[in-house]
Image 1 (cartoon, helix red, strand yellow):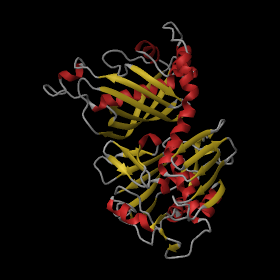
Image 2: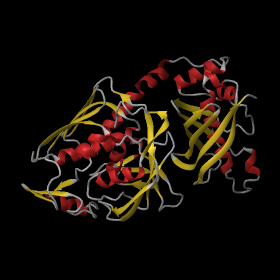
Image 3: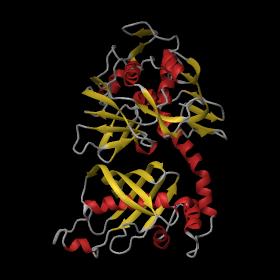
Image 4: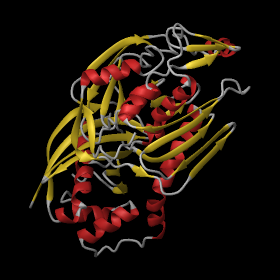
Length: 452
C-alpha cells in the first residue's frame, strides 16, 4: 500500500479485461481495468445500467460487510470489491476505473492471481502529482466481538495477523511488509475459504451462488477440500491479510504504519478505516472549533486562509473571489474546503429568472447552470490560493457530462468538486451535484485563470 520509493501517483498504461462469474451472485460478468486521471482514485463503473453510474471506492460508500465488502451509491451497488481493491493497493496504483457489466467482479480462482495478470497486461505509469500517505502518529485501536486490531506508527505498511475460526481451528499467523513484490509473491495467490458447515447458511441467504472448489477452499472438520494443494502453508491467514489490504484501501490514500490484527473481518476492517479517517480529520475539526469568524473586510488572501481553516465561506466571502453577480452567481455558500476538495451549495428558488421559460408550468433548473455551478465552485478552490488572488477563472471545457435527475424549485443543490490537476493557469476538476445525497449531474471541467 505504501513504498517510500514510489513518490508519484500511478495509473494504468492501457486497458485490460477479464470475464468470469461473481462468487456470491453467480452472474456472468465482464470486467475492464481502465487508466484514470490524477485524483480520480479507484472507481467502479456499472456499464450495464443507464447512465453508467460510478461508485468511488471510499469507506463512506460501504453498504454491506457480510462475508464481503459491498459499495453502494443511490440504487447502484457493486459487491465483493475487496480482491480488486487489494490488487490496486498492492501494486500501488492510485487512479483507475473498473468497468463492470454486472453487480460483482469475476471471482476467478478465489484469489487475486488473475487480477495481477491484468495489471501486468495493462502496465503501470507514473503521474504528475505526488502520493500523500497517511503517516500514523498515535495508536488506533478497535475491539469488536472476537476481533482485536491496533494500528501503530511505523515505516512502510506492515500487517501482522492471526486468524482462526470460532472453535479455534486452523489458527494461523503471518506478518508481511507490503510492497508490490511481497504483494504478488506472498499474498495475491491466497484463495478465499469457508467452513463446510457454513455453506448451507450462506446459500440460503443468497450468497456463494457462484462458489465451487474451483474458486474457494472448503474446510470440513480436519480435512481441506480443494482442487489443488494449498498454495501457502498459511494460505487462510494470508487471504485474511489480502482482504485487509483491499478494505484498508477504502481510506482513499496509502497508509504508513503497522497493523496488528486478530481474527479480522470485513466489518471490523471497514470500521477500523472509519476510525483512521476520523483520526485524520481531528486537526481540521479542532481548527474549525476554535478559529475566529472571518472579517468581512479581510483581503482575499486572508479570507482564503481563514476559509480553509473554517472549512466554510458565506456569500460575502464568495463574492470576494468570484466576479459573478445576479442572475449568474451559482454558489450561495461554501460548506467545506479540505485539501483539493470543496463543497458548496446553491439554494434553488422559484424566483430564479430561468424558471420563467424553462419550463412554464414545469420549472426545472437547466443542466448547463448546474455545470456552471461546478465550474464556479472549482474556481473558488483555485482562487483561494494566495498566488491566484485577483484573477478570474474562465470556464473552458467540460467532459464526461451526465445529467441524471431534474433539479426543482425548493431543492438544495450540493456541489462537490475535487481539483484533479493544477498547472500554471490551467485547472481541472471533477464535479458532482447532488440533491438530498443523490447525484443529479456530474462532469469533468477545465478552466483558466486570467487577470481581469
